[in-house]
Image: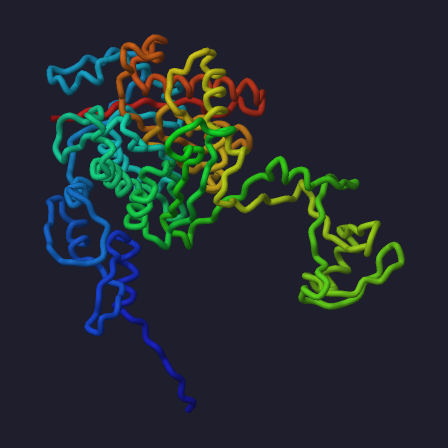
Length: 499
């Protein structure tokens, strides 16, 4: 009888893999008896994940930490008593007796096509909204995009304070510039966001250079370093920056993390204007560009071919000879008329599958200036009523990179002016898709002296909902009959606490 070596599976390795998949933030490093750095599971993090109380430990190990981090972890698992109340029509939402409720004393505008739409707009603190969404949308969201506060010193601070009560406050004496407050705000929200992502889904996060380093560390912990798809650099400023004692901030970043990278398929982008110019040749089948298949002394397959001009070409090709002969028979080989009569493969624009995204986002992703022009035109206003909106082109291309297909769900829980919803509707109009969006925005009151309040908008939510309405009308008008079934409605829900 022949003997063969049989390697049994390692239950410990299987358990380790399962734990890392469920709790990537528990992956850490330690030192063994020989002084070697080895991988490990942080038992304290693991214990914290199954508790809604703070678990304390003094163990020393490699980790990224800050004051009150364990409280933010406990906050993820803490229970709330709240509901999402539907708002079908216009209604007056009266403020409660508690002064903290003064922030929701405004007229809420209701839903559009409540009974037929599959889109959702939620008003409320996104931390608690995410907890409620987890009950219904666990592992169901294909793509999350957020544009959180950048910790610039002028941002709205989400003041969780690990207790119920006041939910949002303004930055006091640049308190928001401290990393701890920002990290305590972003960490629990990203931890909940991961639970909502589908296994083949991904999260996209806009950030500038102030917190980019810390955000990447947080994402490495929550989503796992191995699930980082990339960090895109978006040039948001057209032209040159003004004079300053600091380097001009002309770019921002987009961090991209998959839930499980082995299941995530990155989407292709359409060719840029420069790329389209490459399709400068044409025949009866349409426009094409030349694809190189002949590399003298650098290819894999060596053989000789005769050009239509009578010259013989001998060298190395990237395709087998029988494949070349078939392409030649099918009229897919282009011969250069001059020089060495080099053969090329015809790559037709009609069958072009797209361009692999790079980590540099060019002008086809829009800019801050184009976002302002777009916003003003949509609202038919000369003044801006919303600070720093993102351009629809940026979100449209991110949806393509996220490979969001018809029927998929897109979530934005820092939705602001609802650029994400706008882009989802645009993409649906382009390919007759049925993608659905969920927008979440805290009802921040517009100050009485700013342009939004002067224009009649009581809160940021009112601006976001109005953008969706106007964008839906514009998209349907421009697309004509092909978009008449496009879902441009949304059901409005308001977060309300039961206690």
